[in-house]
Length: 188
Image 1 (cartoon, rainbow, N blue to C red):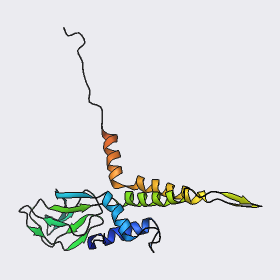
Image 2 (image 1 turned 135 degrees about the vertical axis):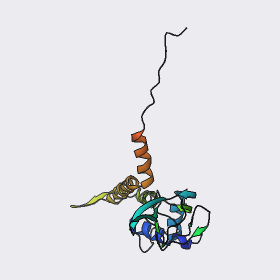
Image 3 (image 1 turned 60 degrees about the vertical axis):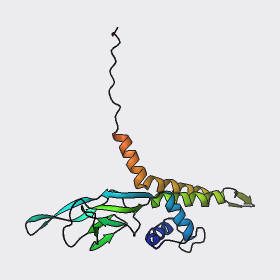
Image 4 (image 1 turned 90 degrees about the horizontal axis):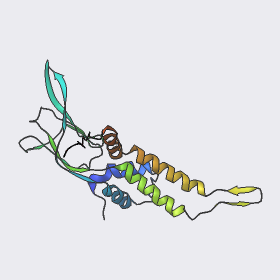
């Protein structure tokens, strides 16, 4: 599978996360495949309009997506489903700015990714390749090959904790309360 042009920034980012700039452990295609595992399609997902004061009135020219890390081939639409061309685009943060206020709501059609989970998967793959290495001592010297395995797994766990999607799920679970259920035991 060839790397999609819309994935270059995301692949570069994960490449830095796994500290593999020369692609010795993971090819760019492997990184893209890991990103695609956590790819979610947004179909006309509404963006949040951010107010700004322009000439004494409120104008809505900046729009944010609920999630970061978008492929760069997404398309933005106004309320009439006309394609929009932003003045500036930050696909990593999920923020777009327009020269003139578009007809709201502004929506996006595109793909969103989770690079932290992809990086964690790639680090776990590297750790699996090192799992059979062993520690040994020869004379006064000792060599601990298991350190690399443990460090890769620790970094993978750290990246999973940094995942915006897993954080959102954890936050939603923390806010959830058990609904109160009442039962009348004296009913005949």
